Image (tube, rainbow, N blue to C red; front, side, top):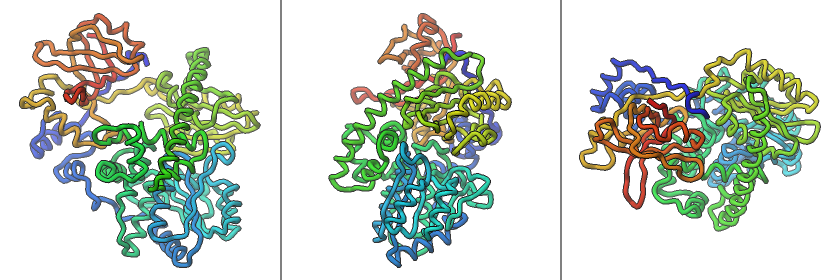
Length: 573
């Protein structure tokens, strides 16, 4: 992205509240403003934020349908009925399956699990799975991370006297499936206080309710770990219960990881503590790769197993992941080449090829937005029906835009910023034009330029003034305590004005630029790294003074710790 296209926006917070909180917590005004911008305005909220506890979970029975769900599950177990755990083929769905199967096996339920094949069954509850359920004498299906729009499959299960409990977090359609019960906080008449749980999070709430209702002694530590992976991977807001789940899960992963995660991190030779970035960039792609290129059951088997069989599964998963990366790179390259010849005045990115693999189109759509910042659809398929993924830019609701065009779709579902869809190939060109027109009609021009939200201006002097001879100053130590950081609880972003570029920046790796900065007084120095910025090298080379926007991070090299700026953007002064 051309750096001069980014919008730099300084967050606005209440000065009076910030000053009061700074005094109350005995912290700097910079840190206080960061907390206030996250809704932390008093001591009690700050204590809950910095010291998340299991007691902070909401009562699971506040979720509509929970009471009847736990009683149906209890009767299935007491009568030794066959229970099928059904999950989507992505990380959230796979972790959901592993979580529920682990729990049910612990309480001696008769349980099987099933995930649809992306190529042959597609997303959601498939009719093929209904046939399988009838054949295998299933009495109860618990669908996780899917089901809310699967009207046909739900009807088919009902006709075969198979009860269905749906645990989904996707936005419900105008008509709900004929299920025994539905657990989804996004239902209009569900008064559960937190609406942003992922599918695995809703599965966790079902387990919490069951354990509470029937007064079981159960250790949740393994389930927190799986729910943390799902929450991190599904890019739901890391606030409220999502942050609590991720906090507890990471804590357990670092103390006593379940065997599959222990094997995975050992295989990666991971040193130091596991953080949320490790879940997103190391665990999630490997779990996803199975469902993208083969069958997600491979990853579910891996996450459920605590035996040596997990090692064998991991080898297959690693092979899938390498294949996925290769496909991802090739498809992205081909899609970019196509977009390079599209008219620049378009408000959308829209690409289709019959030869692309269905499993990587979502990743490719995200890659495209990194370069061409517009709502994006990537489609593939060589038959009469084509499928694909949509991704959006910040502050533009692509789900609503697509909902207005639902008459084109055979199937469609998703969130504000991501959706999946399928349509008849004969409607491709009509839909392409309609999508462009719909986006053009509703999107604001400023939405087409990435926004960098800045928490506060920070000088190197302020950053290092409380280091007390240590390499890591207080302001950074407190930011570390704000972990896990991510969407909804983002890493604090600072603007450093008038930094002096002490030497010519160096190109490191293939696409990154490394800097050495000092302040104007030459009293304080800090390194900076700007990832995937090689296209901006000529703009900043031989330039002396610049404003830098980025987060502060710890760099560990040969056991020496120092701070660096993870650069998001630079402007020459």
